[in-house]
Length: 476
Ligand SMILES: *Cc1c(COP(=O)(O)O)cnc(C)c1O
Image (cartoon, helix red, strand yellow):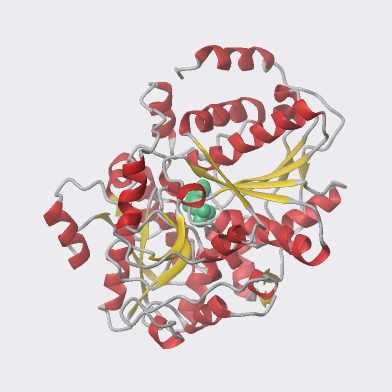
């Protein structure tokens, strides 16, 4: 059992009954309330994001450079300054399978914490793949289909993105090849089987199918892989296909973050129905898409209407790009094949400990979230994994849903804020994104119960090894 067993026992004792309260627990919307447009925060940002640079020429990248990898519509969305972009009817039709998603009031968690704070959460785990990722996988597959693409190559870390895109490609008749980070490929066979069931081919990365993969294997045959390596492999496969195959990314890029805003747009309506507005919005951050998805529509109200609201992105202490990285141009992948992006990064050669929460093991943060952090419009927090799993177990015991290991980072921050509200005697309203369930991640919980997880404090050396080799200057 967990190392701090005594703490948990106290919690369990308090929670042997289901608290009955005269408050609604669940706020739901009708199908016709699925948003009709995505919100594009670029239109309202006080400082526009700096341009992506070509990896070879180091000049701002143009649409033509990206057209090997992405369909034109997504390239347009990437740089669009329009505040609203219409969601195609076909995409809304697929969204209807699981959207609108429910918003819950975490009454039992509030009770267990004995806090005056009101805690709400948006639950994205009701999607077919079990996370928020299908919100962008579906439009991405759709636009590829519209432009005649027959095949897509992508990477996946813990398997969440691969399964979301496998589901979406199946809907629009596109073949999919997935490069899955080796540690997850071995530790999480069920995600691979889910992708196979939706018709995708899955390869363990680094693989011998690409030059990037073969180079890594030559250096270290036992490489556990990383998201950065898997991206190199998928990008390479798409690039050498001569346009017959495209590439797709599940986070980081502007259009991906924009597709996720259906989460926050629905949440605003649901909070209105509950007669509440959040003081604090919290979500875990890997590349930044689920954080953006929930927070950007609220940030619009902060930027345009001066609403007071704190938006906090929570990252693992083992991969702390927002809190300990540097704001500079860096590659999105390990081999340096992608455009250079202006972002908070630990350096593209940074490989986090294998044991840590799969989906958050990425060296950089999205350009949009990075710029907003630099401008002080959002905040960041880094939390060690034992605190996160403890929060996840408490959440499961109070609210009933077992969160994805990534999602527990958000919950740990919620608990910190709820405890602070109690200390200060303030009735704060907190909203967080329960971005996925953890029912296919039970091996991570097993490691936690077996005491195999430790909090790894990054040394100065580890933190700077990836940054030292970056040739690009920091950006003021
Ligand atoms: C992929 C994933 C994340 C991290 O990715 P973001 O781009 O930051 O959203 C977090 N939680 C879950 C459940 C995921 O699948």
